[in-house]
Image (spheres, rainbow, N blue to C red):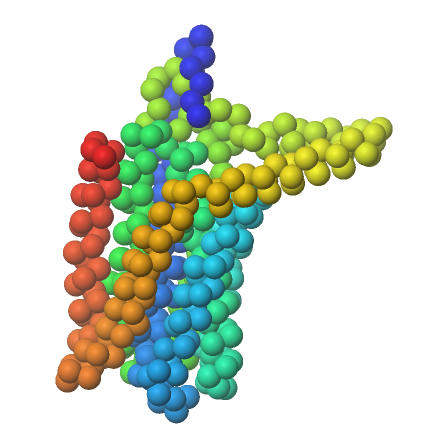
Length: 330
């Protein structure tokens, strides 16, 4: 929400708005997300041979990833409201990175182990998109600039596809699929550090208005400002009424649960959820089996990776077109 003050707002600081740092962090979250979605596809045949399992069985690995990816959104959405976008995104990226490294280190020990550790990656990925990013973008960008912001963030996944399509097949051929997962997981761990260091949940934490807001406006105080001040005062002065503080926490928890229940009762939640579920089924099936089917048709893993690379390039262009269109038309 934007509040217009009677007095003109202070002059904006020169230089790039901090909102672009949020875009950079969001871009990297999509890189992590697509790393997890694309890695099994790029190494599917290697994994199947190493575990000596059928295509149906190897499909269980990505199926359970999808189950936790879809179901975990509820958990991350609740955490986002409880602890803020910065901590939520950092924790989600860390869990995804752990899943990547663990898969490379332990998946060869059997199908059950592979399913369990890859489900961890799916749970982490659930917190890297719909449950967190829209809230963060709504905080940092005025309504007419949110499509622009998402248009710059979402291509992070497609850039990931381009890079992985070029690097991973070569890495697998020269080393092993296990090393490929571990290397990518370590990179995602570095992304986690970046997110924790630079993401801020509200523009007010940087003394800024949302990017694209009219002159004379400022960000509404973050919901947690008063709570943070109370906690600061409590550290400086002994709490006289411990029961009052406990009561406040109980009220806040009840409010979060009430909001959560309200969302579950909303028709748009189930409408959009159904559409996104249908999309994800098609997306995950095509993503998982694209490389395997291309190799089956007689192409090499490197050539199959190039197919993903060119698809990613086309998507990067179209996402920026449609993101900016959404700011101008419905």
